[in-house]
Length: 325
Image (cartoon, rainbow, N blue to C red; front, top):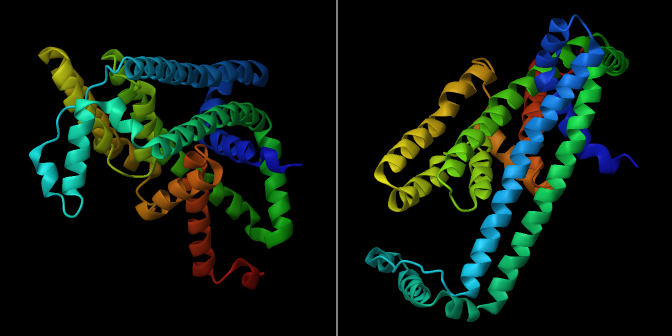
């Protein structure tokens, strides 16, 4: 019965642990009023969820309509392939010929591969469905996180008592360790990725980039996976430079370059110098989490895997909690 709620509960717990210090500050500024702090906090979190989600959905729908209309009118034109494509080992000639044919008539070329087109369409539908499910789970997780924050003191006390039953006097230390690790990764990885995605998305939206929501999501994904966001941003800069006036292209380029540098500034500050989290662990957590739980696993996976990684080595270093009791 609990299984359908497990992912939203995990996600909600991560959100609550990461953002509780801000909620606590808000409550103190309101004279300790939990009621008003909860109301304002709920409104703030829902606004932060609704606005980006609306932007993403509207962007995808608008771009999808444009692409479908252009395909129907056979108005999509690919540029001719560069001669360098022929130099790719083994498959260069095939890629060059196929690209050249597609640049002449894209629809006719696609009609030669009906099964591949069908598979690609099915994959896109699955991705879309996963995004919709993720949005619903995130909304539920936000509601759960608010409940966690309101009852934070009771949950903290209950967690310590439960762990003391299992591992003895190490219960308090364990709870504090889990809290610090989750907060460090959530802020240093997820928050940085969302910040980069927000900044990049603003630039994409201002220049009217087609499918801006999808490109924004790709920036967030690369940032969480600890891969350079320039892999997505550089081709977009080239595209904007060839379609927009020079002044717009220059401003856009400067802005997006700043986006690529954000993680170098924020991540060390938020994760902390002593965290020493291997990039490979975060990458495996992001990819594995997404494969296991869908898009939402991209956010929860790194936190869970880093937590397990840290606790395992703490246990090894101390010779095992069970041996000490």
